[in-house]
Image (tube, rainbow, N blue to C red; front, side, top):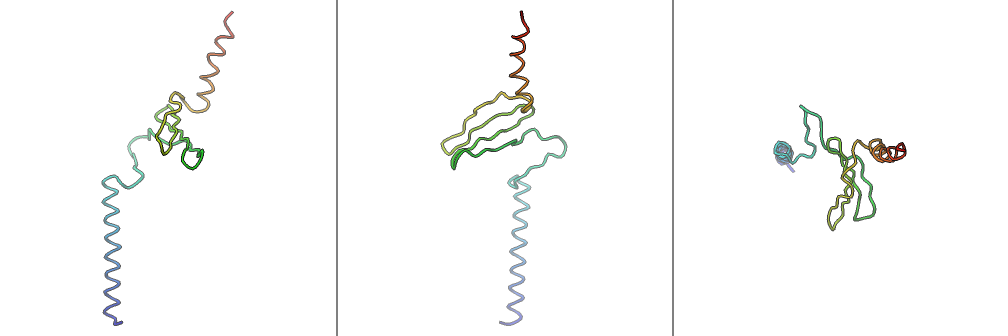
Amino acid sequence: MDLDQYIRFIVALLFVIALIMVVAWVMRRVGFGGLVSTPSRQRRLGVVEVLPLDGKRRLVLVRRDDQEHLLLLSAFGDTVVDGGARGGFRGALSDTAGPAQATETRP
C-alpha cells in the first residue's frame, strides 16, 4: 500500500465520523436525542420506581406534578393499576390514616 492509500483511508474515516456527528446533532435538535431538558422550569414528569415482575411484565410508578400513577406494562397492553396516590409514600399513609382517625374520634 502506498502512502496515498493510507491518506485516502484516513480522510474517508474522518468524513464518516463527521457525518455521524452531524446526523446525531440533527436528531438531537429535532427531538430524537433521548433526554430533553427543560432549562426554564422544573420537570413535571418522572419515573419514580420500576419493578420487573417477570420477563414480559413490569410495574412502573410515574409521578406527574404531585400525583403518582402505578402502571402495569406488558407485551399485551398497558394498564393503570392505581392513579390516585398523592404526595408519595407519606401522602398515601396520611390519606389512609385520615378517614380512620375521623371515624374513631366521633362519639
